[in-house]
Image (cartoon, rainbow, N blue to C red; front, side, top):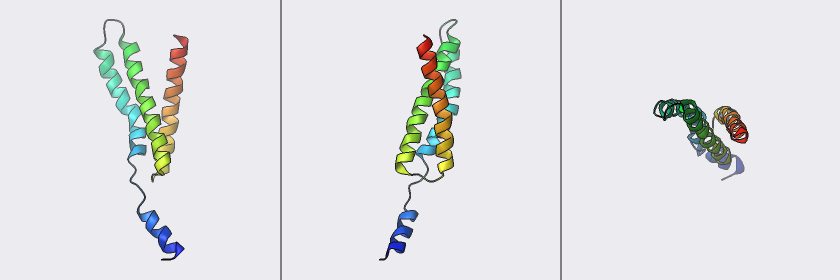
Length: 100
């Protein structure tokens, strides 16, 4: 087997884009869960609990994006979009916790 055949086999065995899809979907799922958490929060703590849950999903999404980078998954545009979106949410979370 020559070098070109080996490269062709490796390119066919690339992993499916699972983690980058999860990383991109995490902020949107987090928003829905944040709304649910905010609606069920104690009196006058709706926004605090809702934003905590939503921004917490940003951390999970950022971790999913890093895993996708390490695995070199296909659809790198999804990975890049998820990393950017989740990095913004994580920075917002860190700024919020540094104020409190």
